[in-house]
Image (tube, rainbow, N blue to C red):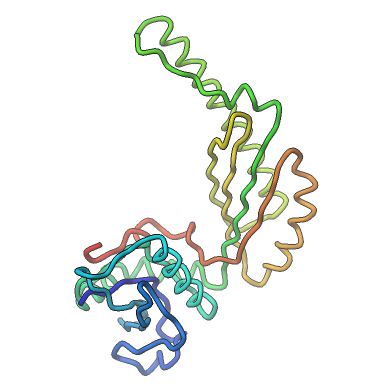
Length: 248
């Protein structure tokens, strides 16, 4: 039997966490494929897992929601380091080895993220001035002057979109003043783009952050803003933690 992993948290924050030396059931939580969820202790940490049969178990869109629910429920009471969806350890030793080999990174990450939450902003921008920049430039199949001309035009429009996105993200940063941020931008239609912004904030300031959203929406012209959270700090994990797995 393999183990499906959801997240890692400090052992002492769990019920019976200080005394437990063997996996114990977490009451009231169901995981992937409705499996019971357990805490697997390893040193000062615990990996939140459920049993998973590779032969009969399946991972689908429902599993994504089940994974996120377990992480969110764990996050209500403690700092968590979420594992990526689909992380499966084939043995108990693989779990222990993952914790041992990444212990320093885990310790630093938990310390940095303790008392922090992630808020997300989806900013849809529809501005008439963006229409030309949003038009895609088709590169010709041939080489030569025409190809180079189109390539330069495409690069120019990409820079124009990036400049607009950077200006908006800076404005949003000033309005919300987060501790850290991560921003991605993509085209949504012929004259619009979507900025997906993740902010790391102190959990104690969530209400203050949410109160700023109404005034921010008024200042961001030609934009539709949706604010969600608090979430576990998915966007603020170091790469080593995000990719940890046994055999996944």
